[in-house]
Image (cartoon, rainbow, N blue to C red):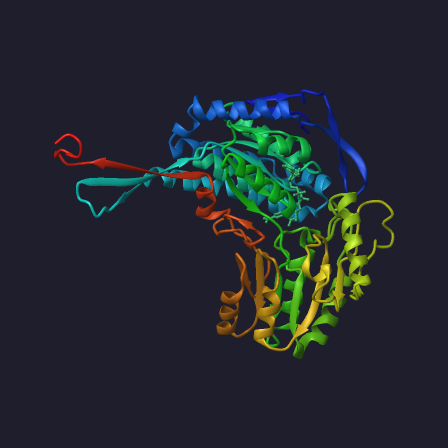
Length: 491
Ligand code: NAD
């Protein structure tokens, strides 16, 4: 396991010598220490990224040349898939099969952007038809420069891949800061990139706190672009910091996503996807469908089945076979989610199941999967992101009412609808004010499709070709193409 910073192609201790603990959320044991980067370390990382961009020619390589490194990184991840997935489990707490899936997805993300980098070579210029025939013009895409990427702890390696792969494919260089509670797999990514011979400075990984290392990245004048995934309040800070020197910015923030189930849906299918939509990754998913709206004709039966199946979820250490719900990521997160459940009860919600530490788990940040009914529409439980295995469920009567309730949120990341009536499902899908809509499912995420939110859930889109656009500027090159004189001053 790595513990130092990866700056300019070298492993380096933090300038202050400070380290911080890595805790296994299943056991509460300190399993490792990693370096706590200071503003000075961040400055070194940004300068290395600057040099790699401005002088050493990373953006001047062809897309195909950059793609070779990306494919080698993908291969490197796959070659160590089980080992990296295990690291993710002991760092984040998620069940091993989920971690294994994340690691495979991260490798796939590097392959996908390698493909786009190669295509980019074939289509770098777009001719523009001008009304004035004396001129010709074309639009070209160029990398923005040095990207500062700041990521959360819920998908540690995958979030790193979502930022690093498109940025490098576009020709940007990167300084990445993982979340302080989950640094380990980002450091392994650096080790893999290093093994591929990636030129020094192209990718730099600085571990450390948000308030010191993160703040130093967003304040740095030589960073051209900030790419952030995390909470709304930090997203606001990042946008404000970017405003000072007009850094490009993309934000992927939180949500309180609705799942509308009509009464023609199969109850077992609905229960399966409702559970996947909120209990997968312990509910620590920005797009989790945490507000479930069920048409009144099937509400009672569906709720009873949902409670029955939820109580059967096997809770435990993510390394144990058959476990489907691990611990939350940290003591702080556990405290916050428990406090949110208590506040929901005080506001009038009823706990249909869960709501407390499971029996037999004295250690570890475990919490039972929780279903809340009767959460008032104005309560935080209904309106604010809990970011844990906690779902609010309520009945509705008409399609119109369901859409109104679904859209009555300051967030707009995702939404889901289930119905056997395809026309109705499409109609509701288009009525949702959200960037990601699922029909007859919730959560499946594909590298090829755009990802991001409406309203306070963010700005910009990751993944797919939109993810590459995040790291590109558009330049017009216009030529005076006649042999004639312009004749304004010089007649
Ligand atoms: P967070 O905002 O506290 O932290 C995210 C990252 O920002 C961390 O790396 C942290 O160190 C850093 N940070 C904190 N303060 C900073 C500062 N002042 N300057 C620069 N960086 C700073 O969020 P979290 O607790 O890590 O993650 C949970 C939140 O992230 C949830 O609200 C969730 O919805 C959101 N999230 C969104 C998506 C998405 O795709 N939209 C994905 C995952 C998580």
